[in-house]
Image (cartoon, rainbow over all chains, first blue to last red; front, side):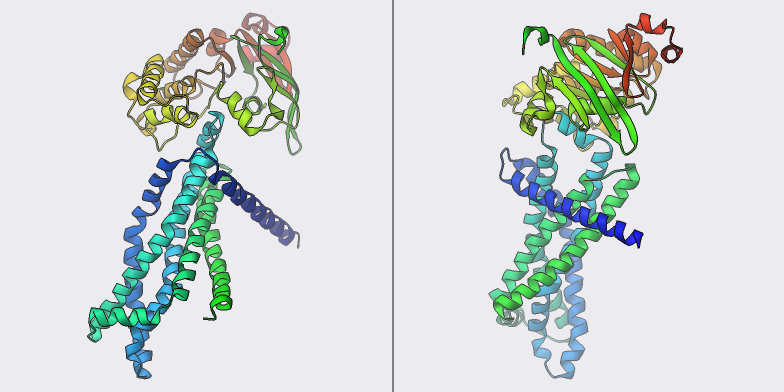
Amino acid sequence: MRFIIVSARIYFITIAELFHFGVRFIKEVVRPPFEWKEIARQSYLLGFLSLGLVSITAFILGLVLTIQSRPTLVEFGAESWLPSMVSLSIIREIGPVITALICAGKIGSGIGAELGSMRVTEQIDAMEVSGTNPYKFLVVSRVIATTLMLPLLVILADTIALAGCFTAINLKDSISFPLFFRQVFVALNYTDIFPSVFKSILFGFFIGIIGCFMGYQTKKGTAGVGRSANSAVVTSSLAIFIIDLIIAQLSDLLFEL
Amino acid sequence: MDLANADIAIHLKDLHKSFGDKHILNGFNLTLKRGENVVVLGKSGSGKSILIKCIIGLVPPDKGEIEIFGQNTLKLSPKDMDIIRSKMGFLFQSNALYDSMTVRENLEFPLKRLRISKSKENINSMVEEALTNVGLPDAVDLMPAELSGGMKKRVSIARTLIMKPEIILYDEPTTGLDPITAKEITNLMLEVQKIYNISSIVISHDIRCIELIADRIVILMDGINYAQGSFEELSHSDDERVKSFFL
C-alpha cells in the first residue's frame, strides 16, 4: 500500500513539474532574443535526418496495410474501395500515430539522452553561470523544431504510404495513377486532413517538451541519462495515444465523422 | 554601496544548507576582498563545491545572505542575477565544455548570447586573445573530445576569462592532472589574476597549488569557517585538525 502511495505521489509530482516546464516554454517562446540559428539546426537534425527512417516505414506500412486489407474487401466484392479505405486509414490515424511513435523513439530518446548528458556533465550549469539562458537555447529551440517538423514528416509519411498502397494494388491488379489519385481524394475530406495535421502538431510539441523535460531533470550520473532517454520514449508514446484519443473524440463531436 | 564596502567583492553571512538530515553549511561566513585569492580547504564531502554553487546561484541556500558587489543576490530577479553572473566566472572541476561545439563556439557562446559584441571581427579577436592568454592559440577549431585533460582545463579557463570577469570561482582546478600540468595551470591562474586583476575563491586539495596561489586560506569544517589565515600560519597551527591538511 505504501509503495502505491509513494509511486502515485512521485507520478503526480512529475506531472506537475512537466506542466510547469511547459508553462515556462510558453513564457520563454515569445520573449526575445530568439535563437533562429539553433532552431534551424535542430529542425535539420530532428526533421531532415529522420526523413529516411520515416519514408521507409511509411512505404512498408502502406504496402502491408493494402496487402492485408485486400482479401477482406475481395470477399465482399468491394475491391475497388481499396484506395479509399487505405487512404482514410493512413491519413486519419496510422500515418500520424506511427510517424509520431517513430519520432518518439528516435527524436525523444535523442533529446532526453543529449540534455541528460549535458546535465550530468554540468554543461547546462555552465550555460547558466555564464549569464545565458540554457532553457531558451536548449529547450525552446528543440520544442519549436519538433512542433514544426512533425506535421511535415507526417504529410511526407502519408504521401509515401499512399505510394506504397499504389504499388501493392499494382502487384496483384492494375490501376492507373490518375484513377488511384481520384479514388483517394474522393474519399478524403478536410475533416479528415485538418484533425490529422492538428494532432501531428500536438504530437511534435509533446515529443519535444517531454524529451527536454526528462533530459533537463536528469540526476544520478550516466545511469540517470539512460533512465531519462527511456522515460522520454515511454512517456511521449503514452502521451501520443492519449492525445490521439482526445482528438478522435473531439473530431467526432465537431465533425460527426 | 558605501566606501567601507567598496573593496569587498563577496560577503557571505551565516550561510546554511542542508540535504535532508545532512547539514552541509552551518552558518558559514566569508569575506572576499577585491583582488584577493582565497582558498577554501576542507575534507571531501565537507560542502566546498556546494558553497561556491550557492555563491553563483546554482544551489539556493536554506538561510543566510550572499552579497556580491554589495547586492544581496538572494533577493535579485533572474535577470539581475544574470547581470551579476556576467561579471563572474566559474571553472568547473569537470571543465563542462560544450561537447557539441568547437573550442571557438565554446568561447563565442556567452559573447553572442549576452550581446557583448556584435562585430564578427571583434568576437574573433576576443577569442584569439583569450586562447593566446592560456597558451592555446592553435586549438580554436578543435572539438573538446580532441583535447587532453590539461588543454580542456586551459580552454575552460579561456571561456571563463573571455567575459573579463571580476571574480572567478575555481572548483578543484588541478584535480586529475599530472603534477607538471597541475603546476602549469596554477601558474596560469596566477598569471591571469595579474593580467585581469581578478578576485578568486579556489576550492583545492592540492597543497602545492594552494601554497602558490592563496593570499588567505579558509578551512571549512563542520559547516563553518573553522580557521583562517595565511599558508604559513595554518601550516604551523597548534590545532591538529588544521595541521592535518598540510601534512
